[in-house]
Length: 105
Image (cartoon, rainbow, N blue to C red):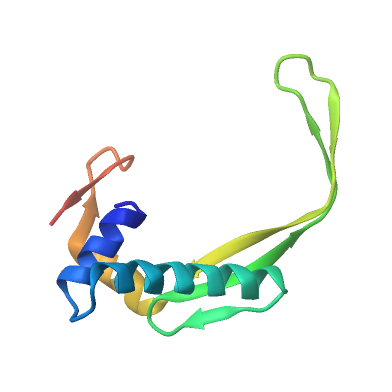
């Protein structure tokens, strides 16, 4: 599902116009992005938590040449799913026999 499909789904399940739904989805995404970029956590009960994730500087190796590459420290966004979200996924999907894919129950 992409953003446009999400807007369509919200539109079908609400009394809002499609434009209002688009603006609502945009505002939610913008608000989460803005707060995490300020260093704040955004916790949505039973859905999950968005938060900044600091990473220390490290040295990696180029896989072909073996040359050392210095990777600077940085902050990346992180999402941790909530209990309700995790349970919903586990109730509806299961792994295939190979364990590398999933299917609906």
